[in-house]
Length: 124
Image 1 (cartoon, one colour):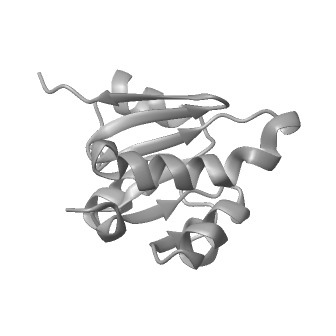
Image 2: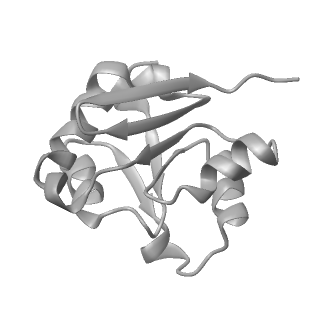
């Protein structure tokens, strides 16, 4: 699997500039805002798993679903960019996916200005 074969599900919290940019460079991105607005977080995770898509979100609650509740995931990319740094966010997302795309599968990744933490989910 290479990075271009990855597909994504963007949570409603995901900045639409990220969705547009990923689509522009050839990724398949379904956006909750377009297909099922107001879908509950747990249902968003279930949809991502069912469609084998990595979830892109800016909502920290998904970390609780994955780690505290042990909810299944295909991969989650949590974007944590403050307002003052948002101008570099889209490029950082593209760079992360292009450079580490397959590492994101089955991982919980936090992308912040200047760094990304990729954490594989362990099974009990």
